[in-house]
Image 1: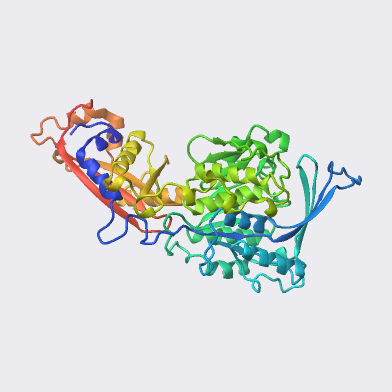
Image 2 (image 1 turned 120 degrees about the vertical axis):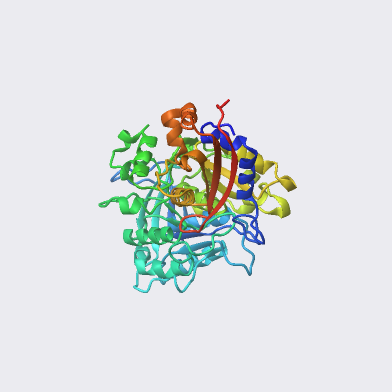
Length: 529
């Protein structure tokens, strides 16, 4: 066996190839890894506001003390929570009449005509919401948003929350207990995706925080749209540590980072990384208006995601609700198993379509109006039997290992694999213990960072003459004394045999069982080529 850094000799050995094939093969008597016999995506649970929007269109926005004559008026459905729920629902095929919805809304309306109309129209869009359970019993009116839009599509908004402030942490506990698995992630994750809990800040802060904490505890992916930006309080560590994905716009990013808009300009990546350092677990997606979005993940470089032009060349008419369209679409795509970067690009495309029409929900395209590129769950690639591929994140910083795993999956029997391998490099903690204990703990730690299905790989090298050393600590030996030094340790011994053992660990996500697969190769050490 040729010895080089683990990334090289591991994958150049035939038995390593076998070990990786074992890691992604179906278990005996079971469906392919991580998939059920009837694959289904996850769902989106939106906890937030439901409002009636009253919009006036005018040539310009009024300054303080100024009266401007408007050109048109419209009444439409809104509220950041309801907007995002409708956007999430319209990114998906309509649910069958007898089937359960994939999108659920947890919110409150008043006991009035506006409230009953809003609930009815949400249900008409395929959003799961209880008419009785969503009505506030404290006499508050349905939330109202007064919006002014100028000729260039810019807007100002004043919101009177009304019944939205009636939604309490206890209400959220009760609602989510019936929609999410028990705490600890004991519920089965849907094949092809995962549940997403999406929250905004037009409800009481303590209620929003409870939704994020409950979602996180259940193993769901948590998304916070920090709008409107907090006033008189801040997003502390308790908030950020409960958030997987944060979706601020430029103004909100500056506000929650405690800097002025001018000071923040051009520093979006720096500020986003400060929020990741503060506890956001996976990514910050900063929406940039007509410039698209900036996706900043915990590892790797930031990704600029451009806003595509209108599908038919239509101009921008109204940007009201564009940020909600982005957050709702992003959550919907993530729940369907789409990777973070791809989901961000698709969400930019959906939001770009929304600004070509007036209003918030009125401007959101329905599923049958979406171009094929925005319908990955409908027209994307499938594998044998029409199944959608299952996405797994392979945690490795070695491109050779990643390429080899993808090559083996592409060359599998049947012309394709039910798996798609994403990649992230993580600085996982050093762990003491047996190879199995190390592999299990590293996989568990990686799942906490990725917040989804992950696969890790560890290699140990045992020299029989040295009683099994260096074992799982081979990298430290190679970094310290190199290949030649490792060979010199065997001088004077007749037995120069070495055993390289690979353990692949897989888990469906945080709090889920870790499954180990292994293989080994026996040989002698020779200089790397």
